[in-house]
Length: 151
Image 1 (cartoon, rainbow, N blue to C red):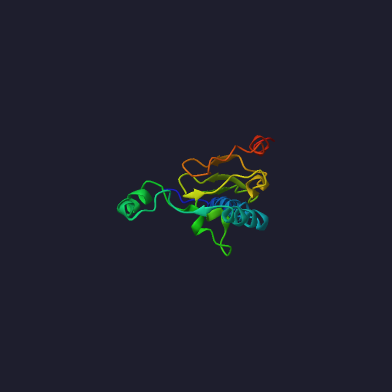
Image 2: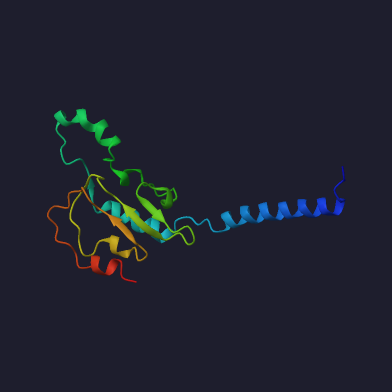
């Protein structure tokens, strides 16, 4: 049986080291956290709505646990100023730059009006938005929605 050339062994070990090191650094170098202005905007958006269930009678308390497991819970309630908004429920960020690109606030117990001056329209990089199954008090759809996804 032939022995492996020591230079070839050293070369292969070096290649493996550089390949594994470059993959590790490339993954972490593009990891961005939520930008401060994006976090501030989302926290302002949270203040625009009351978060309560549409039915708050005691009779319905039996269904609370079932609602939670079916995705009905106040997602914005967990949003805290001292944490990265990219990890908040319903928030999706661009991993390359930290901009908020998606909001999924489906069935989040939001109650209130969608106003044309909502801070929602300050999220200029938003590509996906889902506000279904909330109570916006018969709000008319603000014309700003037409500009929200325009590039």
